[in-house]
Image (spheres, helix red, strand yellow):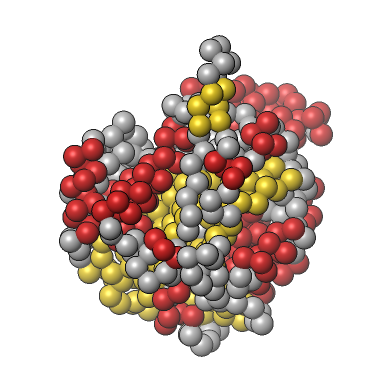
Length: 507
């Protein structure tokens, strides 16, 4: 493993585009082929020169206008694809469990709608509700035989709930039955099936994120990244999407993900902000809060600095446990600057971390049998990184999964730290390719060797993103293929996008 890592780092150092040690490629978006327009908004298919090709093209939508007009244009230009992705996701998830049909989807949809209408929508700002309403009307005008203003919030609810999909749906159905006891007979078989699926799931969520700046980068500027590790091969990778928003009077920003999944799984703004997320299983939760997919967009369109982002965060409410990170190119002013901030969250509580935090350095795991203490927190100056555990004492007290030094979350945290230290020891300043390399190593490949792609359908890394916001550059890689040909994002092609064109675009 050490030899693989050294070979990979040397390949990056000498500027090679293919990393033999990991197995990803790097290419650039060379052209944007216009597919359709509506009222100042445009939909493109991205042409990529080089690298392993994606089976289906990457889409980019550039949205302008009022909140309603942004939603309408999205629904009109992408509504058919959004509906297909919605149905594909559920067919994959429930069909794989052997009990998918339209009647079942209607029953589950009713439970999810209840969660949105009674809880998550209550603290969602009206401007985003206007976008969702416009989306439903636009999709209908495009011929979609379903209400996207209902389907899209369902996906927001799923993304906002804790755990793997079986856990999420079990929680939803159980709460819905408790509030609607007349539905118990109809929903009991579904509830039982989700219990079974949860017991048989292969592993938990494995997302990760990092930021680096100051003394560690070639010019002191900020670079950041995010891995989304979730259910592989749901079929929604057919419609990969970068969505660029130009809300009137706000900061332009882009989100990376899939058609029909509204909000920011991750993203970058024209103001130099990047946003990130990783699951954090806490036992203090609430659904009366700001849905995180929308909250991260809210941060991007309203903040340009860490201080501004923190004020916004403090004046909105958490729901369930997540690790988030907000990074700011504006704040990367030198080796003594703090250009990123982690938010370790649960309902009613956020622990804020900057780089080289003493709470992180003091974190130890005490073996319940031997009483032996092992350090698990290793912060660095001018770098910040998280996987799926926290370091704040209160967050750790309410954490529901393993904090053992041998846990995969702790191991992936260390992969990031060790990668940064290896570059430091080699005298290699961290740049875009180095961040891609570390991010690809940490992405879940489903094998014990994180430094090498197996070439087979293993792992759960479905989206991998790298940002250089000071120069308007981002890289994105998605999962690709299907069934036996499926490969994780971190083993595919990272596509370089210069977002300057889209930050400056006009309706």
